[in-house]
Length: 291
Image (cartoon, rainbow, N blue to C red; front, top):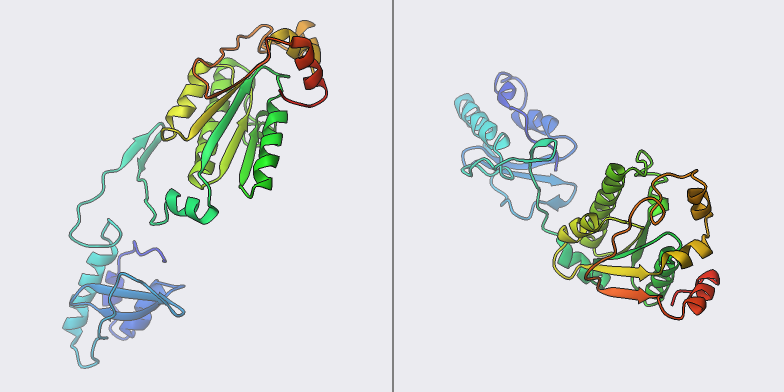
């Protein structure tokens, strides 16, 4: 529906201009279909589509006086400048301040998460895969996505490196930027889950408080934490990107597991242990498989 936050008093000053044409011009691209100023009801249609909550009313008779038109303009003026979805008589909504954003209001839509889940025939959620570099996070994410796709489920992977190619390309690997990296990915993952999509987030996410903050943004049960519990020596022996070698040589600073800590989850829903049968696990990882 077109924006109707303008003042219509200028219409009242032009008695020579047809009232309905003037109002239609102000409300373009939609067309005014019916109007009854005295009852403060406004029906707007675009093509054959009509509003499903505004009743059509009788159009104003041509015999009505200029005074009646002016009164009607005042009524429309009140209607078009009223908050709360355009209905007069309701109190002004309370605006919010979130972070550095002031005077904002959450707009609720009639199509909700449950409707989207029903359409997709699945439950929107976030599967958060965490672990050291080289632990097999991306391999697991792709395998999981492939398996779910084969079962007719809609998924999307938020890979740590991939996201840094675009959305988070302005962030470094300092502690504060890593926290912001996780926060942004957590918010995007939340949007995917709200859309009814199974979002698979695959990234080191070394700090426990940042992962817990992402969990707290979602309803109970919608955040599934998967811990790739692979020892550092196995990840370093694999070193698929050659990052451990660079970190040991001092060419990369603040690398998780070398000179920056990794805080393992305390209550992950799923854990892939690799502390036993290390040699078998290492060979599996080298061959692109996940235990």
